[in-house]
Length: 210
Image 1 (cartoon, rainbow, N blue to C red):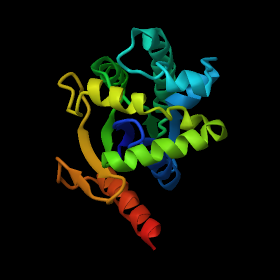
Image 2: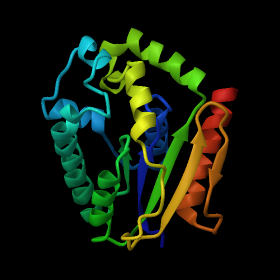
Image 3: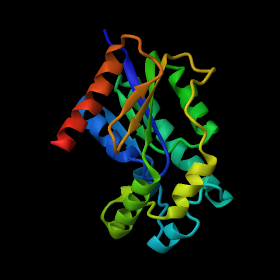
């Protein structure tokens, strides 16, 4: 019998995390929690002008309290889903080590597998996507970071994915280039959940290019 799994998204701003997360969740029938949606649910509202300035500057201390509340709420939702034996996709940047360690603490209560999906993309394409977000800012909460400042600050603070030594659960890291479709993984062992996730990414590439 397959173990339950959690997919933790990570990657620079506009690298394709949310699009990839939604595709995986839809194809595998998982729960999905977006930090952007949770931010709205908690009442953290901001204008396009705010987003252009320092609201999403990850080097700013102004957002620390907000981040703790948003990620705290996401962890509550994660734990509730795992208690119901649901598979989960966590769509957030997970730029900081404390965010990843908090997830490990929750996962250690359950017998499940963790998949870290890191999205990557050439900078030229990211800048194009940011411009598109700006034009569609009000259409979706997932377009909340249209600022180039958000992207460069994510590059500055992000810690590359790694297996948390405190984690009791088996962890797999998948790197997905959302422009070229290239997929790499550090673990080539035969694992059914790993095969399913990679299969979804490969199938999505075929559809996108057809």
